[in-house]
Image: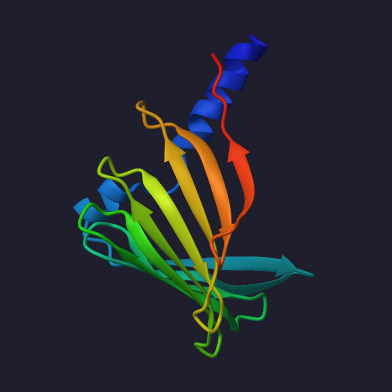
Length: 160
């Protein structure tokens, strides 16, 4: 009985998560606004949490995050390729100053093969290079510094 209840709770929790890209595209949703209502001492206050703009494929192309006072905390801008894979993400502060930039590269199967991380001055700081096996599983992530020197290797091992 406990196992059945646990399964049902897990199953329905996944069903209640946000809309998927297919639904967003189907209904031509162009933006999502998340508003938080706080209840404190019998007083109700509302504030923006996140505002998102979407492209025609349901991908988030702009995200504005707010702090608890309702001020802009940061902005994230994303670009996608024709296969709907994210190829770039730029993080800005509230004053639209770039904090970081990430560029993503994919193999012919659509698996992420590289991540390039840039700083606020748009200078390359590090790279992640992924090794993918014939089944599409990541087997390794190699971290390189800006000069191309390997600073870490992470192995992925899958078990049954």
